[in-house]
Amino acid sequence: MGKAIIRRQKMVIPTYDAGEEEKLPMFFEKRVYQGSSGKVYPNPVTEKISDKKELREYDAVILENDYIHVIVLPELGGRIYTAYDKSNGYDFIYHNRVIKPALVGLLGPWISGGIEFNWPQHHRPSTFRRINSRIFEYDDGSAAVCVGEIENMFGLEQVAYIRIYPDKAYIEISVRVYNRSEQDQTFLWWANPAFKVNNDTATVMPPDVTAVFDHGRRAVSTYPVATGEYYKMDYSAGVDISRYKNIPVPTSFMAYRSDFDFIGGYDFGKEAGMYHVADHQISPGKKQWTWGCGEFGKAWDRNLTDEDGPYVELMTGCFTDNQPDFTFIRPCEAKEFVQYFMPYRGVGYIKNANRDFCLGTDGGVLKIYCTGNIENVRVTAVCGGKEIFSCMQDFTPATRFCRDIPEDAAIEISYPGGELRYDPAHIKKFPVPAPAEAIPEPQYVQSTEELYIYGLHIEQYRHATRLPELYYEEGLRRDPTDARLNCAYGNLLLRRGAFARSKEYFRRAIEKLTLKNANPPVTDPFFGLANSAKPVGRKK
Image (tube, rainbow, N blue to C red):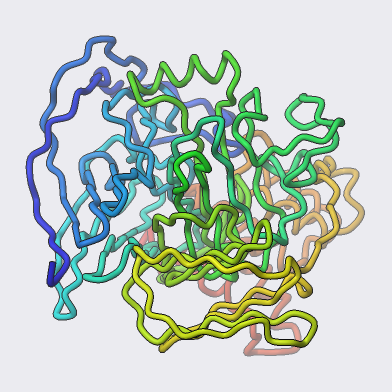
């Protein structure tokens, strides 16, 4: 195949339809969803799912090259529905052959399988809705489908280019999030790939991951071997929680820290898996979610599929490493990032990876997988300052590279355009952190600075039950002239439509900031004051 192929086609999938949307739903002010606010205004919600399965036609976009076959469904939130490794017949992304929603999503219906793109919060409000799409073919032989929307809760705009190349076995996802509004907003982005699991599968975290958190960092566990209580399960005997078969209850864990760019999943029975690569400075989020292998989990498997069995979610977060964990985006600011998803074979536990290669060294055997056709690749192993071997080789995704090495050998793969290294002697072992502590009530906070920080945290993380104004008001009671508190409270009032009230606080902040400097470096209250006048058409 000389170039990547892209086409639109009709696709028939057995489907359990969702019920009618409730046009005037009740919006609970303190509804908690995924650890943050569950308010959905102005969206309708759906509260019923049909128990009757029917054949339904979908508009699908197919992307294909010699190595992978990918299906995207724009009318289901633009998710990647399937991703298939043509070389070994392996669905490296969990393929759910039926659309069987459950009332799991923020607005109700949600389905398992594929890769869901969760933004501006989890799960994506439009995950069960059609979004815009457009296809592109490029001069280099690659092809992409662009899926995007302007969501109606905060007015944020997002576009994602799902792209494949002629001679590469990976999916490239380039994302741009843009704040069209005149106010600071918050968002998160988690790509949510599903991975089929069984007793032979494991989650593949980087070798420097020593601890994992649950949602909101409320609990922490050592990793991969848990040695205490986690999700009310006693793992004190030492249990490898990277293995699906060892987790009996619904469980999330998110890597505490890692200096590596990958996360993956592997089926040791099929000797095949999936991994993800993105710059860890931008994409620190590495998470597994499972319904668990117990009876409760099996019941949820039946709720979400008719025949395809259990899965885990191997989620990847950009600008976020926990849930909820939101990032500020300034007015008219754009944030851009790139992620890669690809199959791999024969390597097992990955020790390091980039978009071109992954390598493993378990059992004293170096194994390498390549995602494309790359010539003139040098592989070198060094141990104790001595070179064990060095060889030149051409690689393709069909190459099976295996060499015996000492367990503590350092590996380097160098090739035109890149390199990949792994040295076990230089792997950091981060200390296991303590769980997060709850924010104290405002009257017990020691300083006005902390009151500002706590109020801002509650806003940023969209806390469902705490009110930021209580912290700002307590701080201003102690010091009515504090510039940060006045500006923060003014912005809070502005977002809530209290334009006239917000002006008072912006003016107080400006008065303090210009006490000795007519041109202060902090200009947020000036911007806020201008915005507060705009809705009523006044200049002051």
